[in-house]
Every structure is written in structure tokens, then in C-alpha cells.
Length: 139
Image 1: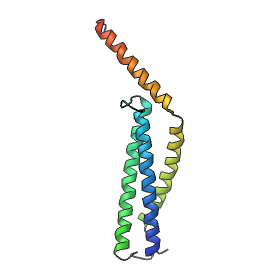
Image 2 (image 1 turned 90 degrees about the vertical axis):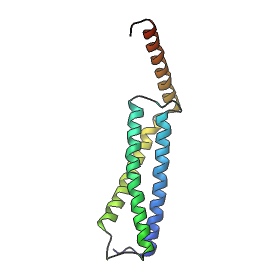
Image 3 (image 1 turned 180 degrees about the vertical axis):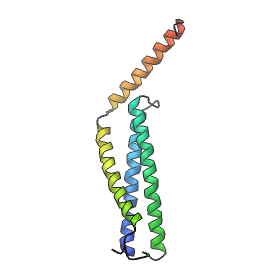
Image 4 (image 1 turned 120 degrees about the vertical axis):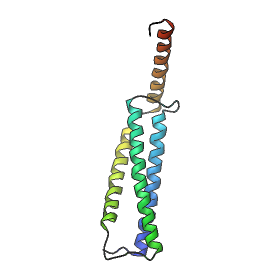
């Protein structure tokens, strides 16, 4: 199947929308991992930060592919008779990212603002307890 100029432009537009969606998910995960303030701790925040890193890496790949397609369109379209294996893997990657985003959004929906506030309260109480132990000479 040959990808013509119009089809390539549609693909570029689709990739741009996908990039914006990925950026939005990254922003949401970042905000949630911060828990509304204080650079949160805990396993959940760590896992969310890891997921943000993974999504960033995937987003960079999608952006590179989009730029490649833009260059191809600018230089006169497709160079050959079919969809390249890279384009096929790009489409596969986009599908995988959409599925992953859906899963992350579902997982993230389980954490409300009260959850992150509770974590902040626990961190504060823990630090106060550590200070009291130091003051008492027990630690």
C-alpha cells in the first residue's frame, strides 16, 4: 500500500494529536505524583514517576517519526511502493501507547486528592517523630 502526500499529511496530523494526548497524560501523571505539593514519596509516587519517564521516551519516538514523515511530505511524498516496516511499527507503537494510556488513566483514577493529602500528612508525622527521637537522643 502506497502512502501518498494527503495520506502522509493525515498521518502527521494524527501523530500530532497523539503527541498532545501523550503530553496531557504526562502532565496529569506528574501532577498526581506530586500530590498537590511537596514532591511526594512512597511507592505509588515512585511508580508514577517511572511511568512518566517511560511515556516521555515513547513520546520522543513518536515525535521523531512525525518529523520524519513531515520531511518526507516536504520532499515529495513516499519513496517506494508500500508502508515501511518503520511506519508499521510506528502504528503498532501508537496503538500500544493508547492502550497503556487507558490503563494508566484507569489506575490513576483510583487515587484522589485525599489519598495524596494523606501521604503528605504521614510524611509530616514521620518527620516530626524523627525529630522527637533525635531530640530525645534515641536516634
